[in-house]
Length: 126
Picture 1: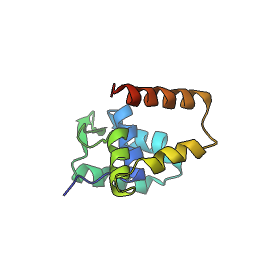
Picture 2: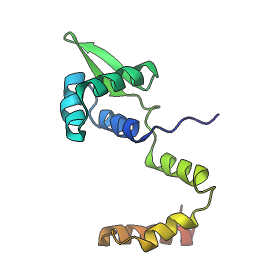
Picture 3: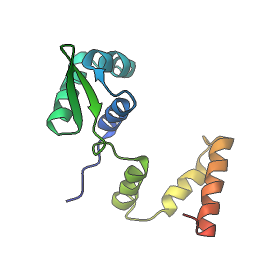
Picture 4: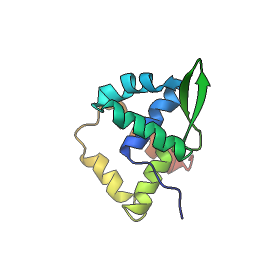
């Protein structure tokens, strides 16, 4: 069975911890939970659940646990997109490209990045 891709909450939580290693539960709640409208209990349960699943590590520092995401727990954007294309789009990339073609929210920087990616595909420079 393939590794489970984290859901939106878990992905955002693990991303926060990977960007803020050594954060205490209080820091996680104040910097992650409050901004997203979560109550403290939700954050504490998430810490416990992800620790028991082996996706985060904890270290006792001055009587307080500090938490960090384990490298194997965080999935890259590439892996998440690959999973989406494989599982939801049945391997077809055309619907994804059509989404970008119809998107009215792309700024000039996004368009330039997409053009550079197409150039890489055309030249075989992947």
